[in-house]
Image (cartoon, rainbow, N blue to C red; front, top):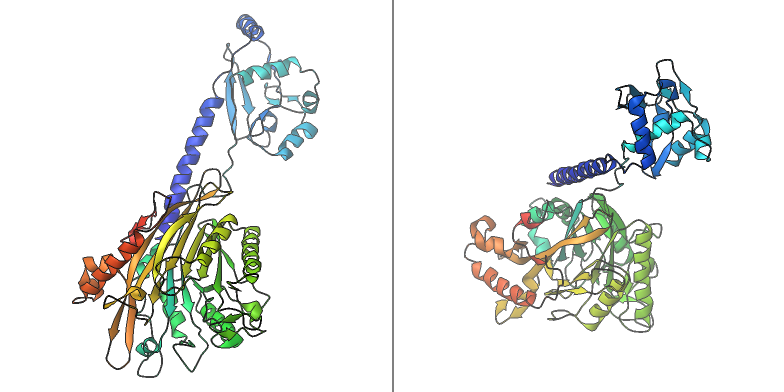
Length: 540
């Protein structure tokens, strides 16, 4: 699929380039108006043909990208054209495109006019013409050729692919409670969770890049769920096989196993070929990443809220962050005066990613009030600050329920920032009851954005939307659950293909809740919409 997108992009760019060349050639070959003097000279030439030894050439630099280089005949003998006068005498003149100062300098310094017995002309000593010296009759004759507008425009391919697109999808929290850990245990004591993301693999694969939030750690045994999470390494394998490319390891459970857990989680994810943001193994690394997707450089960063200061010490999940873990994690305090200081750290990171070449900035945040129906004040202040800093997209999770999507103005940019205030849970064993139904903690969302390279080289958001998901649980009755995020509309259309026969009511209720929440979206982009099938991610 990615190969098809690349071929399609190259075809479009090639056609645009060819049309540009044809248009410029047509313009260049249009004869300019002839002066009275030239008309008289042309009339005189019909009566008497000038001898071939009068022929010369001049170097004309009409435009930085349009040069008539008849002086480079012996360098480019294969690039020739014939100019005929009224008596059908033919002179062979080489015209070579160039737009470099090096070639122009060569014309001025090293060429001379030489005549052969056959009347062919080698152009030299053009320096005298360029310095304002008088042109010889032969040079005047060369200007007659120029009057016919015979130029070869030089069109360099831009250093980017016009029309190239990069699509990115993101899911919310992957939160391993104890029953989920047990659900992947095999008879031989190993663990396998490759079933977990099987129903969203196609959506992840359709995009150019997919990321998720590993809420908790991969800190090794003993494996534990709430309140101090540590899941088996097989989770990382399942993420990779499920189509994910990047994992944010930064959330309020990142130090559940202290600094050692931070480092090991990061390392295990990388061992399975996953990029990691939000944490790092040492101060020699960055907590952010810039990825090139189809020629578009995208910067990713991740931050999490703290659970308040304890004796002026930062803390996560009620645990004071150890000194050796402080430089390894991106966390912010929600209370002043610390909040303003941490906002500065976050925007400084945006600047660093821009300096590293990022053309698009995406922040994955862990913030918000658990089970809330709307963004809180901290989330809105984060969005406004990051929008002002030039961030393009925020994916947020943490409330464990989905929240509306809004566009946030960016004062110095033509387009606003897109903010997903909460993607909800991707997969977990949480249960939040609403009207005696399995509730909003089971509802999730896959956020999707796509960026496009424009003709002027800039990159802009060209498509965005979301897929609604539901965390479907299969319980074997022995404290073991096999939970999966399933696209809601696809499952309701074909229940048998997703193994939900008899449970359609759960998906219908989820669809009603999620649709109601999405009715509160405030997005200025006309293309923003709900997606249904994997192919709804544009690939043209």
